[in-house]
Length: 401
Image 1 (cartoon, rainbow, N blue to C red):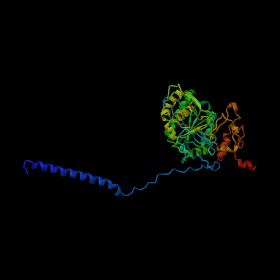
Image 2: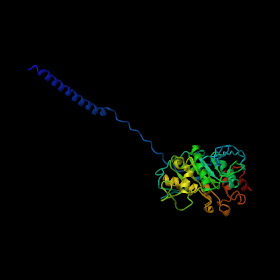
Image 3: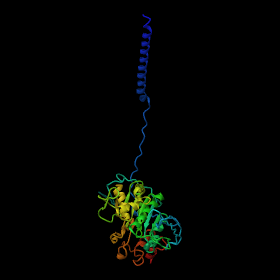
């Protein structure tokens, strides 16, 4: 062997051995990777949570009547100007002897398948109500009841509500007004569409602050049958998208679309009339925030140039694409209340009565008080629901005579 070539041959041989070792290590690692999954124990199966079964709501005749045990006051909120202030006022509730505390707030920033058990028509556009519904473990304290009124009705309408159903929901009832009243310590504001939207805007913000599960709006000529309201809302879950109410029209309203476009196109949507009352779940109310919170509600209403209850329907149906659930359990003075069957009156959620032009438009219940003593029939309904109220006539003793 030529000594000049020996180092070269040795170098080539060592390089070959190194390549062989490298390839062998790669093959060995590949085999280990293939064997590792086979050596692992099988994965344990995890049971997925099952949806809660839907339970049929209790019948109206078996529903328990919730009587408030609070000795405090109905919280009364007022939108009255351009600063924030609050004060308290104590007086006795007519016929009740309960103290009333007034909280005054001033603010700077101004299709369908019928469910016979609820009297509801469920829309099909969306809103998280498809399939089975989850019931809510609901108490009266979970409901925010906003009452919209105005100065001229404080004495006649508001006193009647405080004397009747609101006395059973003192901690849940918030009264929003626009007028000056020495007794309630209010400042005057114009009763216009803008003033109405100001009140609805404050109602929404106060509800969000309250952390309650349901927002229900009624007018000062509505009687709220609290057991029926609780039963209706308990058949849904507050985290779902739920908009409950009764339209005043038999067709959707049409308006120029000025929020998502320049008004050159129109949009159709249903809305629940505020005169009969409506309810919105907290889950849906939170989604309304971009167009309803912190004064945005007023801006939205001005853009579409519609009243407050129409604006609510526009935000929910047109912008959020959640359908109104139509229900016949809410009633306004615009319908013929005398046609409501007597044996179903206490199963309704809200009642109303005719105004000065139609005083006879009331529910057909004649027990307890005469029409002269109770022209709205609210006292009669209240005494049927809460017969132990101290000013209610004792019907049992009357029958004994």
